[in-house]
Amino acid sequence: MTDAATAPAGDLAALTASPSTRGVVVVTGGSGGLGREIVRHLARAGWDVAVLSRGREALAATVADVAATGRRGLGVVCDVSEHEQVEAAADEVEEVLGPIAVWVNDAMTSVFAKFVETDPEDFERATRVTYFGFVNGTRAALRRMRPRGAGHVVQIGSALSYRGIPLQSAYCGSKHAVVGFTESVITELLHEGSPVKVSMVHMPGMNTTQFGWVRTRLPQHPQPVAPIYQPDVCARVVVSVVDRPRRSTWVGEPTVGTILGNRLVAPLLDRYLAKTGVDGQQTDLDRSVMTGDALWEPVPGDHGSHGIFDDSSWRTSPQVWAQLHRRPLEVAALAGAGIGAAALALRRRR
Image 1 (cartoon, helix red, strand yellow):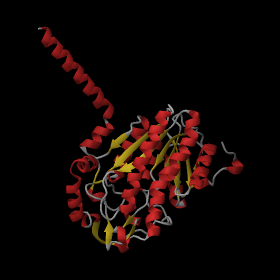
Image 2: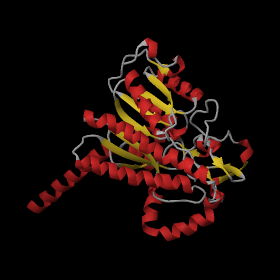
Image 3: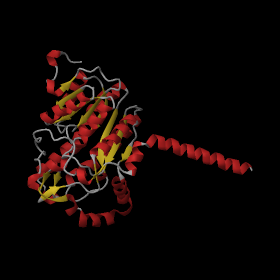
Image 4: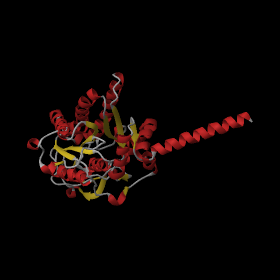
């Protein structure tokens, strides 16, 4: 633990509560959008939470969110595309809060543009944050978890981890890469008999701040592919995975349909997305009303977790409800199977 002489600045640390009995979680990209909701829900669930992000004002507001739940919080200014910064941030978290039990990789950025119209430097920047940010976070987590023989890494993925769409080649390519990278890591941990867990949680389109500050060459304000989900309910699924690790979780009917559809009828999806994917990712608003451009530098201020699509966003769905009630549904299914087997056996005896 750090002492007063080396403690972080007051607005980036809330340390008055006793250490959590649950442990310490790190969330990258946790000061806005889905990451902000993940931080809030983890703190409410009793975890101490460290947040890695570039914007100091948003970090301070996120730490205040954690403190409001009675938990300890720490904000670390960090660009996850730089592995030295991520390693230094992990050291600071363990010095101030204690051993990292869970690491959630969520930081991302993107460019909305046709591939041939995307500047190479912008494409590489989006890839460094959205892909190498996960690589750097996973490396920092495993360097600390493997020697201790305990820990859990959670990768926030997307339906677009399995299906590319127009105008988001950098993001889709990065998310596909995260899946391949994560599968390699899982097999290596199994090979060495490590108890460290790795989970992937794949999300639908969400009403987050991303669409207000993404770099874009489109004439209109970008929007997620409909149907749009509120980040709050998606964050609840992440917390359920933190509590009960599982290899892969699909959130929302669109995610299920997209992944399965791409496995079965990818050429048809190619044609459908070619016709609908460009206009379907733009609103009627001019892009001049966007919050800013966060590709290379953070947008100043605190913008919370929600975007501008509250009126058209889903707050739940049957598939999400089933994910959040997975354990009792599994128990009920097993009980039903047991009752069925017993009834069949009784019939045979008669």
